[in-house]
Amino acid sequence: MAGGRFAIKSKKEPKIHNPHSLVRIVKRVKKMSNKSKHFLYKTCTVLAVLGLSVLTGCQSQIGGQTLPSPHYLTDDVQYFAPTGEMKLQREAAVMQEYQAQREAAGN
Image (cartoon, rainbow, N blue to C red; front, top):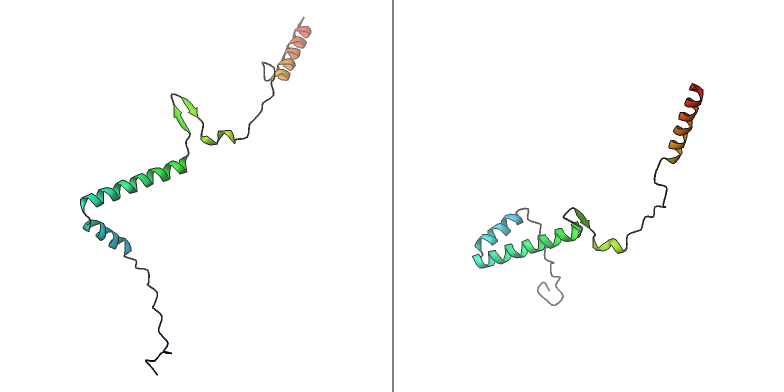
């Protein structure tokens, strides 16, 4: 019963990855018409630009200003408490005290 209803059919062997697949793609592109090549190049360019714009974000710098990306609404806000006009107030006070002591000791 080799050819009967119950014969075991052999499974197809899986295709082995061809290392020269890029060469086949290039040959296939060379065979394409100019109109098809133009469409292919245009499509690849649009996809590359879209991919890069997604990866780089939308923050831009125009006229010396850095304009925000669309994620600025979800960014955490940093708060800096108001301080005096001089940031080194204590150091300035110590220097004035030292100068006053030197003037008092010198007179």
